[in-house]
Image (cartoon, one colour):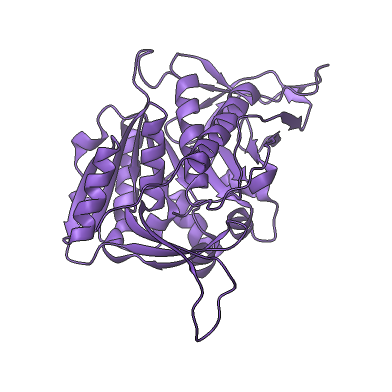
Length: 370
């Protein structure tokens, strides 16, 4: 689970707008992840109505909400100590085995919201790989699994007393997926493709992610990327990370504060809009804020969506659930032609993300059986 947010979910959110003077011209989010539109600003009396973006119809109005996710399906070993760890000794605690991986978390959460979710992943030819795939399918996710010689990926999540996590990861077969193993039928009828940035850090999976984005854009689907984790981004380097993400031409980018800071460097976080026209920055118990602008080079608009913090023993997967809720709502709002993707639509998407994360945090977690 590579999610963010300490108890960052509720459906009770309030939104505020910044950058109050707006423009009349609508903009269009195209499949090439650019926004075009009139750029003549005017002053208006209501201060909360930033410029909007007009999204064309991607599918007929009766289209099913569907999301294809490419990335990791891991075994999560979740460890929580009941007392401070004693070096060279032992303390009581809890150890659980769960299905995890950022990509798998998003696909599963999207299905729980009533959408059609599918996962493209690579797992090992071992017992864990078979169990993880079976567990995903039991949850209603269509799994396109490629079985590799490497062992199935696994992750140890060390959970502290506040529910915050630190990770030790063995990627294993997760990075073995190759572009040549993708099948065009997997992309037919999809309305969105989501890729956690973990799939961009190593080859050959990075090549598979680029090819998947090409196929998704060709199918008229929206492409979203989650920056996933600050440490791998920092190890890759800001410029290399921006270039890798840019190759996917994402329409929506998800990040937390630390990840956004790595990509922005010393510059403002608004520079992330050079990569994607809509950026959702998750802020844990403080909610989230959305950045967007109607056209490249024009004024940046910001929407803050608050949340009521909750106490959670384990926040693993909350950020992934937020992304699923956000994307599910965005698809709901974009079923018809000429739908306005402005502050109201983005606020609904953010609140749907909070509700999805809250539902995950309140639900008992199920173990993967050995």
